[in-house]
Image 1 (cartoon, each protein chain N blue to C red):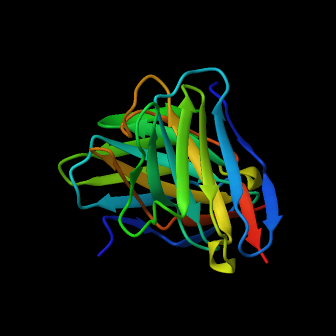
Image 2 (image 1 turned 60 degrees about the vertical axis):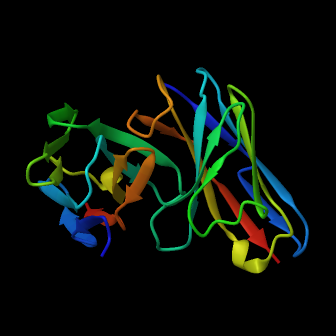
Amino acid sequence: GAVVSQHPSWVICKSGTSVKIECRSLDFQATTMFWYRQFPKQSLMLMATSNEGSKATYEQGVEKDKFLINHASLTLSTLTVTSAHPEDSSFYICSAPRGGGASSYEQYFGPGTRLTVT
Amino acid sequence: KNEVEQSPQNLTAQEGEFITINCSYSVGISALHWLQQHPGGGIVSLFMLSSGKKKHGRLIATINIQEKHSSLHITASHPRDSAVYICAVSSGNQFYFGTGTSLTVIP
């Protein structure tokens, strides 16, 4: 089956620093990838849609200058949390649809990245 | 009001029991997804459907577009089925997620 990887799987950083999370589709190309955030005991929340070759689309309430998304190639999207604060501590997950760019296609999820900001 | 409502929130079952998790939604959708999230956090897409019924092993998913309702059934439940099950709908390029159903299957 299709595989999506994320790196790192967990990271601890100090307040004020930036952290980059990578999402890769290993055996298929993805023109679109989705980034989610999940707080403890809560469901996923879509943060943004990453589009290869163009700007990301952010959901309402998500600061685009704080959560920088770059879709550098058809197999790689990165999410950079800039000037991280403790409230940014969360589980960040990406997904990629295989066979199309839309959310209506089956999603393949990465294993997630647990970010802890101290 | 959430666009996607799931029930029950928590469910405990004995091994072997038949389990049903329900999902209702209020928006027009292009597809409905059932996801499984294990305690470690990893998410697996179980089903994507836009009509009718799909079956994979002991899992069955149904959707009624007119009633805006979907169910996920697990037959002959097993402790390894213990996880959080999340219903999500695609509407345009939007995703709406249910709050999840936490399932515990006791041996």
